[in-house]
Image (tube, rainbow over all chains, first blue to last red; front, side, top):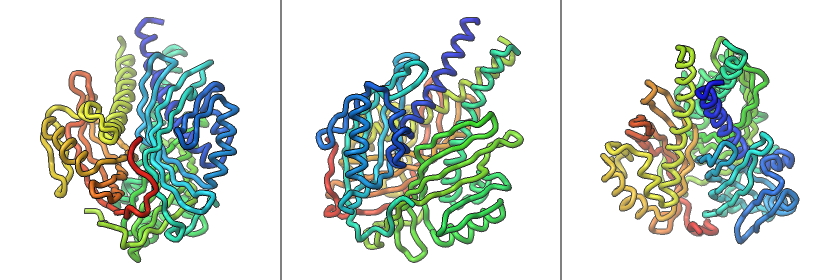
Length: 158
Length: 158
Length: 158
């Protein structure tokens, strides 16, 4: 293959990688909200770190992340909807990238209150054996609003 | 063209298709919210199905979808803003794909109340004669919040 | 290079340009919300126009846009979170494109009130010397909701 062909391949590869990274950011939300543990765990590498700050804590490695998902997040927030937006990606090389995105989260708390949260995620991604996944995600919650239950019409996933 | 060239073309085609499918998901929102009937109808194939569940009903084919848009959605919700997020796409082959995305909708009801809704769309897309469009969209509404009018500052599109 | 090769390059270039334009739309939000003036100013060409309608005004050129950011937006809205969605792009040629997207904005006003705003952006983009940036952005605010402070749990960026 000519050098030119190799350069073309590298550009197509980066476009495909960008799409995979967008899907990771989306699947974090889908897995978490649809209670799909397998989909959620697939977005992380085995040695990944999930940093959720002073209130919720930091979780190191698949086992801790899975425990935090099931015994912390899903227990305290029985119904959640996360919307990811403003995703930007910067490649360090063909297999490593950093990312930034914002999350809006609507959650029903175990106590019945409704919570609106806005957060920013600072991410590190790596491709290992052809698979892109998150190596580190730091979630910085910067706004929360509680909506009293009486304002709500309906709830719960069907 | 060499086999390698054909593979490259297939990869570029899938990248372009992914962008077209993202635009479909966006144009569903733009068409619906900006009262642009042509833009909204363009996202559907003629034999498409729009499933909106037990409350709003299911609509089969362009004629029913257009009627539901004008006589149901636009009548009951005079002002709407839909935001699509978390779009993921899976290709079955070069011309068929499935998708998943979440929708946030802020609506002003005919009665004046303000409604915040969260929903998940499960989609089937097909490319026919070079044109990607939705074959089936199932909208699963899983959360609604009513905000009393007295909390609102302003409204209405300009 | 064969004509076919040139056509391939043009298609890859458009895919890359679409990603750059998505990043512009995201960086407008990140720059504005994270108080990152450099990131915000990078999304505009020097002669760009930022139209924010009758209430906030129109701003012509980098100097006015920078002043509006610092002395108007950041002063009146001490805390903001913008989420961009539904971005669609149409290319006029390889270096010029128009775009449409919706913005959701949660803001804390200087007076302490909390404001939820929905807006639509109509954009013109150009690539000059290899750099894509906004030439004109018209922001049409079509919905605002004020949430009284007593409903809010916490606030402020950490």
